[in-house]
Amino acid sequence: MLQIDLWKRVLIWALVLCGLALAMPNLFYSRVETHNDAVKAIAASGGVASPDQTAEAAEWPSFLPSGLVNLGLDLRGGAHLLAEVQVSDVYADRMDGLWPEVRDTLRAERATIGTIRRVDSAPDELRVQVGEPAQIAQAVALVRDLARPIVSLTGVGASDIDVSAEGADVVVRLSEAEKQATDTRTMQQSLEIIRRRVDEVGTREPTIQRQGEDRVLIQVPGIGSADELKELIGTTARLTFQPVVGRTTDGSADPGARNLLLPSLDNPGEYYIIEDRTVVSGEELTDAQPAFDQNGRPAVNFRFNPAGARKFGTYTAENIGSPFAIVLDSEVISAPVIQSHIAGGSGIITGNFDVEESTQLAVLLRAGALPAKMTFLEERTIGPELGADSIAAGKIACIVAFSAVLIFMALSYGFFGMVANLALIINVGLIFGLLSLIGATLTLPGIAGIVLTIGMAVDANVLVYERIREELKTSKGPARAIELGYERALSAILDANVTTFIIATILFIMGSGPVRGFAVTLALGILTSVFTSIYLTRLFIVMWFERRRPKTIEV
Image 1 (cartoon, rainbow, N blue to C red):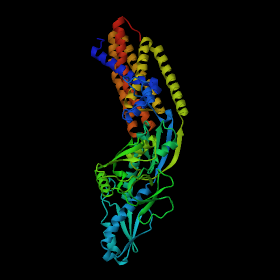
Image 2 (image 1 turned 120 degrees about the vertical axis):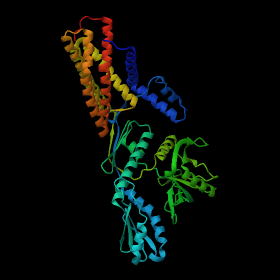
Image 3 (image 1 turned 90 degrees about the horizontal axis):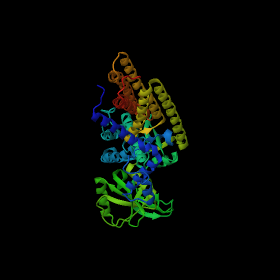
Image 4 (image 1 turned 30 degrees about the vertical axis):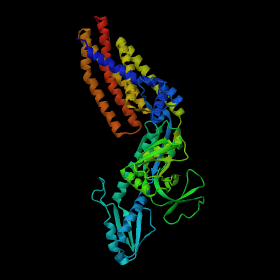
């Protein structure tokens, strides 16, 4: 009997209405986007809203869905960068960090191997000259004992350093296995830090991926220019807290042994002499948030982890009344005088910066320091005009394909074709509803996936209608023919769509960037097509059949 249970009808209509409600904000894209940005800004400021933000937030009712389909770089415009990570910088840092440990180890045997001295060498090696060349083998053995096993899948059983003797010099280099592991860690850390910095400033769906051995591709839709993106990503944000020795206005003054001469960010022309030792570093920072100081000036609140808080507390307790330099990228941004013991591991950075600069500084500090310098090999700014042209071209393609399919179905199947056309329109709305729900990014290949879905959705209806025609030829009644048509076409529809869905899944897993965008729209389109072709059109036909009770039908 041709019928659908009441609970199934309610469920089908509920899914359709829910999907269309989720897709609706995309019809008012600019208004909803303005509303979302205002709501996000108000939330970031702790619920305090300016009159402009209140007005912008009121542009879209808060009780309605506000999710949007994010537009990709080719549709919205934005910035494209290809950067090369200087992984060799990390080798030099590793050698510099290893030197104190090597020095202390060899000093303990000074009576045997004589005096030791670090001599000039390549950046990726550490060369130590011993006073007794005859004891070079002992010195090599002592340094070799400092080697540690490599923690990586490819370097199991290998050591992190190679130690050899060249004349009276002990030469320490990173092993090849350690270099590979270091390269992998450096690239992963760079990708993660770039992703944090880009995501923190409110951009949408950036593409950040590794290319080759030492390159990173960065594409950020909606950002103003490549220079703006470079300024954010290229900032190293190395934060240190160091003791202050004195001040001077002479930029060429000799700071003395183990001291540094660094410029003041607050007062141009003024320089600080600080000790070349770090009390607490930015790596021990757990949080940084923009704030205001007691005078209402923009500042940054920060908090250390337990280890950093302990060191910070001990130093402030022992140096009350002394200035303390906060150094960011070799510039003293603030040098407050320690007024009391700071035991909580938190404090505030004040300086001559505005609200935007304090917010950006907080973002950079939270994201951490890039492990190595980045060189930008390629940069491109894609203007919104190009994106508008792409959207227009995509609209034309969709309209042409849509119109052709609608006309074909109406001419081929009459009333049943019109039912399929109505389901097809709802199908496209459901696709956009799902894209908005999951926050997916729509690109030009994604539009191609939607166009392909339109054809696939009609294909399922064609299978059903042709099957109904065959059942009518066997002298079955209209109700029975419709019921058997849907039942017997189901296996063919599922086979075709399941295989295509598997392909879409493989494309999503193995692909990246635009390929993934195509895979997402294709996979979602398959789900909505099966739903509308099997359940929604059947519900329409059943409702029509119950109302009209035709003795014969013509498909």
